[in-house]
Length: 67
Image (cartoon, rainbow, N blue to C red; front, side, top):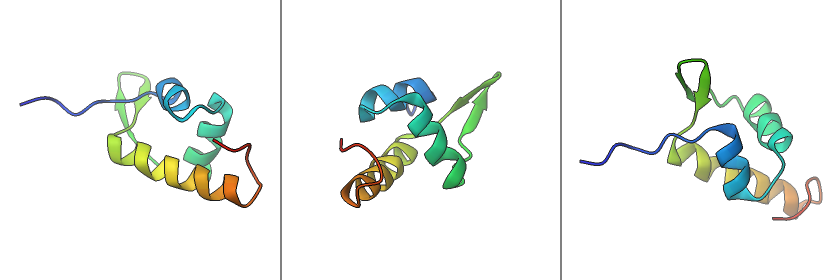
């Protein structure tokens, strides 16, 4: 069985097409914990979906540059 993908902040930013600091802001303000792989924080596919929804919602309201 395939292991679930573990996504770093940089990978999340690249997938979402936003700057890293935008992802970090949403991680911090929305309380996403992710998990640790050594000293690196990694996030799941469900975290990616959550971030995509949150960033899209804020972009729609004009708070973030649109995706």
